[in-house]
Image 1: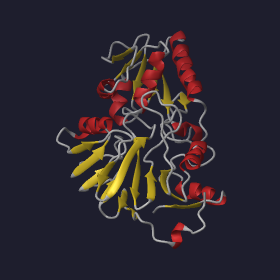
Image 2 (image 1 turned 180 degrees about the vertical axis):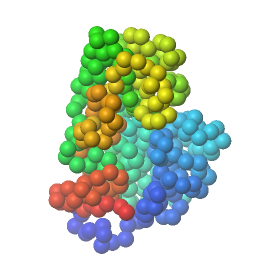
Image 3 (image 1 turned 120 degrees about the horizontal axis):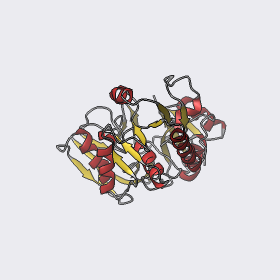
Length: 326
């Protein structure tokens, strides 16, 4: 997988710069954190979206962005695996398996293939297609969980743990609550529990996102909007954070679980009131990141986010040309 001539010894065709997002040739931005004239947005989590001059995204990401930021956004929608031209580049979006609408971005010019993963997951996701990994010459990947301690158990095991948690709470006369982000994670948790025959209720913002998911064919059996009185016999799936603290305070005799990949890091980063942890993540774990590289077969790997220095060192030790971006 390592070329006979180091990429660092010759000038790449597509120029890359990290500056609050990935800049290609000074004209196209990937997931910029500031307003740009032309941006490709890989998915609709808050740290990846913005009000740009012109945005390119999948239809689901476009819909979620407008839900979050307003209908006035100018977005060109692109279906997965249908190439389009942009500023002299050939661009193709592939499913990233991270959340509804998430996409990896393959950029091609003059025989060079650059793949930007955005946030990616290779494991099964109940609310979006599995990741499709094209081969490339250069790979830009996240490494949120890029150290060996982060090896997630099978998703089926975690779903069973959440179901057992809910059942145990109900047997004890307690009200079960599971904390999960309102966009992406909350929908996966709600779908997993609902398909297991467990009643689920969610607050307004999570419900509004679920309604949009339904427009794209994702169903949520046994799920209802939480009205403050209908928790009995159900589990409340609610986002973490201060916005929902007052809601939680009104629920008596509750037991709280937290669905997060960071659960494998131990209790220390979490509030004391969390009773149980479920290592459910919408990111690739350490082994999946290695699998991503095996499948994409790059000659050079550029690493962003998370444990980027450690993961780049790991790849170099395995004989790959890799480095963290600034």
